[in-house]
Length: 136
Image (cartoon, rainbow, N blue to C red; front, side, top):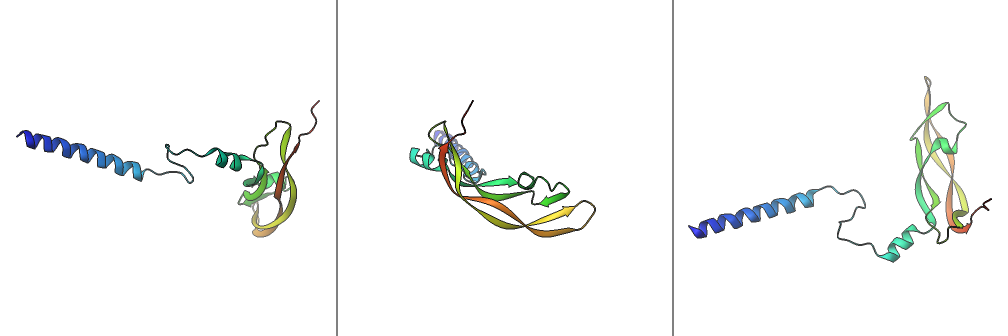
């Protein structure tokens, strides 16, 4: 009898453990999300956060503020833009080389036809930490 109770106890414990393990493995993780016990090394953090061109979603109206009569699809575009940190508060991350890229964007005019047209956007190719604007 004692053996039977012990066996049932251990079987239930194993069942609960396996059930929990199954759910923790099946839990959705966001893209790029890491498990809590992993630590990102200092050099990886430093290199990934330093001033560099990084893909940024830019609202089309930010680039073309005068074209308010249109609705754009998509409303924002992925562009390489300077971003990240500089080691000094007096420096800012700025582009040193730029180029234009042309993308196809759907332009919709209210109560009129829609068409796919080409629009040019500025991309940053190289970035550098440079002196910030003088403060007064």
